[in-house]
Length: 346
Image 1 (tube, helix red, strand yellow):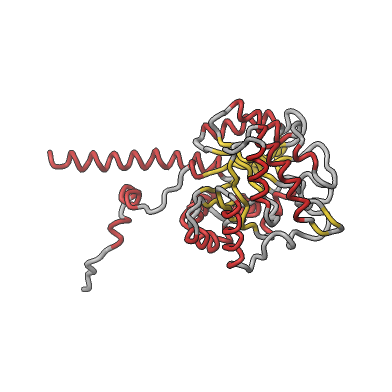
Image 2: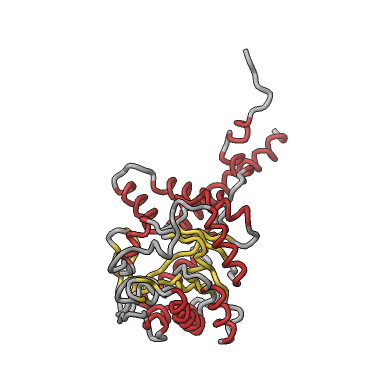
């Protein structure tokens, strides 16, 4: 009877051994939790297409950020719906807007929590596009001037990092200059460098009331078929001063994440977007999948592909599950160690 000398299964025989040789380690410290703030007080409105995610008034956003921090999540990203909209999205740099007030409140309450501000205009414009229009075309250079105002206002509110999400050409360099001139040299930039024109954003556009009123965003977001273009965008943003590079969406673009990771030495983030979240939630609600296992496997795949940072709506649940798993694994490893030490004495 054939007996192999090499038996990789030896390293899978128990949870204790599997944990010892595991190549990728997922942690709550890998996560950024997105929070959506809205005008008003005492608002906690569940988003129908994103179960267990909410539109929150500022005081509830601060409370949720505190909960995330207590779970070991080091960062939140703040999105918002303004009290008013206009053609250029001027409420995006209004210091009295929900986003700026939430940033200020979170920083005052949890100063060690890293606050990332989503720097875009789509939620703030009447037309839902990510910049200033010239007819039905988003004017690239005119939009950048507005984005600089947004970034500086977010830094003034207390953001540790701004995250330009618009995909305008050249905006990273201009935002960097604007932040530096305003005295915010230590506010970093996480660039949505590789942001595809994806159907996976659907639920978020409901959540943040940011769907375009006409057309789509294909003239500025990337074609999902393109790979080489992603590397070009990454290199341009790094040259302009980006500190962190993001790929969005995550799950259908893990090949892009790997190519970016293999190309650069900068931190790489992924955005596990609303559509990816909603699909898992819908399947779990129907009893078709084991939600916990699917979520942790999905997030692990993103880290395995090369992501250092994972922006995900699953962050709160995943942090709790990982804490429970760590406690059980520690117990198993301790018992295995104890058994090995005591066995020779019998």
